Amino acid sequence: MDANEVVRILSQRIDDGTYPAGSFLPPERELAAEMGVSRTVVQNALRRMEAECLLEREPRCRPRVAMTAGVSPQAGEMRGNDYVAACLWPTEGHCPVTLVAEGVRHILSATRHRLVMVSRRIEAPTAPELVLMEGRFLQQVAEDPHARGVLVWYLGGEVNRPYLEAIRHRGIPIVFVDRLPPCGFEADIVSTDHFGAARRATTALIDLGHRRIACVASNERVSSIRERVEGYRRALEMASIPFREELLETADSLPGETTEQAYERIVRRLLTLPNRPTAMLALNDELALQLIAAMRRLGVKVPQQCTVAGFDGVVRQVTGSRELAGCVQDWIGIGERAAELLLDRIRTGRQKPYLHLLYHAPFRRGDSLAAIYRDDKLPRGVAS
Image (cartoon, rainbow, N blue to C red; front, side, top):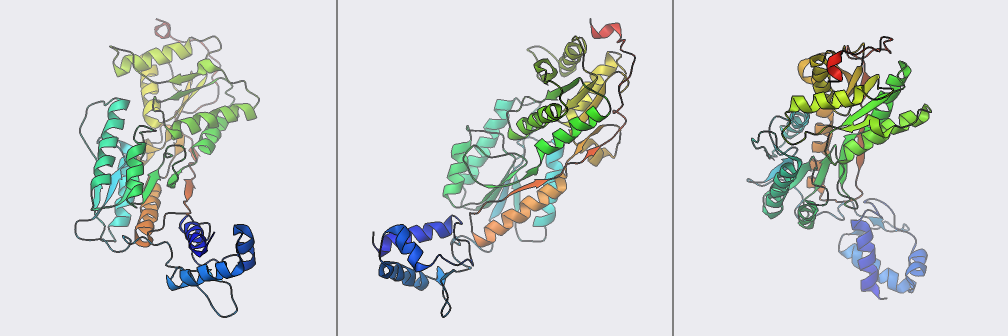
């Protein structure tokens, strides 16, 4: 190994955050022993890195990583047509995204950064359609020289990974909002503590005396749903309540079903089980509202005959209603922090170390919440 190889290894460690900006390098003796070279080779490599402004050295001190080391040549001020791309949801009308976008715009409004969001009008898109639209937008961003940063509420799993890789290859920073990137794709993430929030919500229902608690999830195959289900299961385990597979439901419509018919079918199935659930934890507010509406159409009293809790807090934040109990996510705060983090990456050009920031989602009580109601008689319409 020669001085060139030592420079390459040390430069890579600076780029990947092993030696952060401002930190001291290990002593020359340790570097020489680790790499199997003489101290003279290490010293020659360090002098070259000082000449390239990667390192700074004060008298009688070890070299320190320069504060400007690892900065991308594209970093800095925005040019006239440059913009920040936001793939927060491929269609219009998704309420959580509206709040996230409000937080993002609040931060960008104080800068020269322009925001471009993907938003298309499609009535009731399927999950594959959403993934396809997301992929097309990410592909456009990867090919556009004016894109300087990306915020993404990720839906695409491994399908859209090539577009993320293409964006990363161009040196464009990416911040993931509320959803994790594909396995092994390291990036900044600003999200909710989904696991902890779902665990606390389930525990709140247990504290009210409920022991038969159903969990109703959306059909999205995304990290946030998986984490919420795991939080639900963990709360049951902590309370020594056996997990029952039949109480874990995925909300999906069968061919030819309307939305109303689908939720009525789900309610009937759950409430006609032996030892039927006395409470349901819906993993987003829209699911919770659909379940409550279906129960009321079937004559089931909410919360007396079945308690319902939601997750995301959109109903409270948009309408101010306190009817629905559930976890309340700080959507605006998440948007603001994600935008701040992205702007910092754009300014400095640094890619690592990446940050994973989690926001607390407190459980709030509401009119849909009650202790167990002793009257187990359900209307005939439930079983029909």
